[in-house]
Image (cartoon, rainbow over all chains, first blue to last red; front, side, top):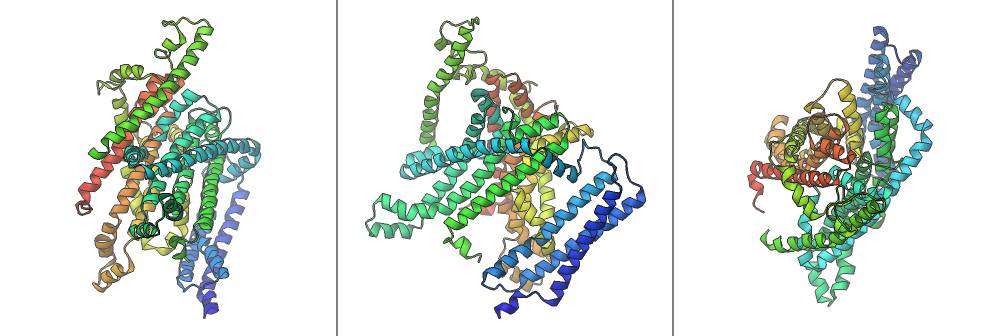
Length: 341
Length: 284
């Protein structure tokens, strides 16, 4: 039974194959067209443009076919084994991946076809080239931004957790601190950055402080929620075991807070990275992704700007998914994961 | 609210009291450096100078209080913070509304077509972990070089930043009705338009407002960043970058307080609209 459910039906296999053929064909012929008309400064003739549009339409058709085939495939009952899980994950990502390919080729072709100035939209190929050429500089920028983010994240995060534990112990502190934490979530970090940089200088420490401040509040809010939103029945049970408050904290409140802490960690990491980059817009000592973006905008080399943006995006996705992986490891027992599988 | 007023005041006082020695220490250091260099200061010792530096590391409370009325009043003065804040707020709110319209449209498409969802939603979700704001300064310059100037580029950038959380939030909301409710609508022979009008849209409203609150802060950051990276007539971002360049820390602090107040007010505005639009959720 389970093995039968694993195999895609005849129709689905053919649809997926057809879709991949469409996308690959579109990619091949669009790229060939782009390579033939290599000049970056001069617009193509309309006949070439019509071919480009035709190939791109074919690519989009392929994405549409792939998407509907994948939807049908995922609608079938799940088998409870790892191979099935992996296959599902891979197939589920297929349409998004194909769409990215088609969109990138479309941008490349249209930017070249209409001879869009480099100072407006650089073609993706040039961005990739710049990524490779400027890898040393970008690596230095990345390590600076990462240093700021990690130091600030660890400092602000641990302070947030400690403060949350304190607020759980002392209700006075909770009533005094929590309203500020809620309010702070709507304060724009940009306004904070110049002030802190003015006070602490342009070195990485000032950005780490800004990151710490932005990470502190979501960590505080989420951890405090996890520590206090415990099932009253479980609290009663702990009491009937004659557990003191320390024991209750260890065995009940902290495990209960773990999923909330991870939500805070994930939100905090993304916010921290954003605030590090935004803070670098306002002052940095020679390196940093935000600094690179501002500097390269100043010289209108937009391919370098996009390269920095690509690196920053990659950084954000990696950090988030690493934390999500850790979360699965640590809180795999939690119902939010069991329900999914 | 009344119950937490005294604790809140206490926390605020503790923060002020703790930061006071830090302020005096840092400013005195900087004053000492100026005195060593032989600069003419109107005050005698480094310690007394700590409260009256022209450009202090951290402004003293007396300086902030002294500057406050000049910086905030009269409200219509073209140099006052509220005047600039008004233009930033205008760009933010317009951007949020634009993002709301586009995001809502996209979310409807995502709900209607599972295939479309498969191809597009992963990118929308990934956008939540990506510093989208990194594109804002470049967008500001590119739009500016294409002759898009004044309020419009700020609105576009705010909308662009606010779009992602709104689209994701509303898509989640439109999908929130459970299978039983959808089945019930089907047994009533509801058309797909009715399904949206009577079930999915009402169910998505709480999600919509949560997303709007997140998007409002994001849009405000977008507006401020775009103001500080192009030449605009008015806006908090312009004040920030001008004062940052002139290292006028006294004004910087006031602009920071102004921006913080604006952010809080704008999010509170979303909360007020939410309560007006969804009176049935008021009782909790």
